[in-house]
Image (cartoon, rainbow, N blue to C red):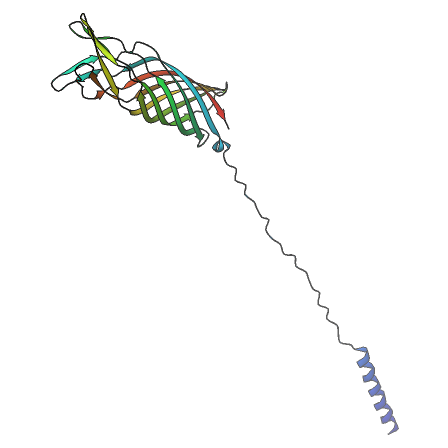
Length: 252
């Protein structure tokens, strides 16, 4: 009995000691910091063609060694008589200004205006010794400009093509006269406005341009006898010319 009691006390003490030694394992939760990774932001830089912002201002001057008018017929009620062949008797000249803007590196579009002093006309023999001295007129065309430049050569020369389309304001018409052995028979001239067209090409070097342009100024003309007031019907009296022009370009 005494041994059983001792054994029981020893067992109880062993269990108590075991509880103190065996501890609940501590679970450590390691907090991980996740770094948020973001894709790099790609900033796209759009570079516009620098020529798109270029404005061009041209100052032009030219002479027209080849020039003439449409042959003109005096149209009365019962008569239709050719009174001039339109041949020129002098050089014409012009001064103008043009503004264009580059649409790309080759193409320009803009507006222009020009003063043109058209040539005088040669005397024309109508019939039986009767001659006619037709009067000239001057023009101010206002027009759209289109210019196409080709690639520049190694020497810096750049060829181009050019076209103009607009309206010609014709003015300063000169009166004319018929003449024979007995005297002169003056008449007044009345010219109308008309369409303006020009085509040509040239070369440019260091902002200096040289070109040849074929130009047409549309016009109708009627004449009126100063003595009896007889007036002709309107007929075409367009002016056509080949112009050698020089220009200087300012960029801004």
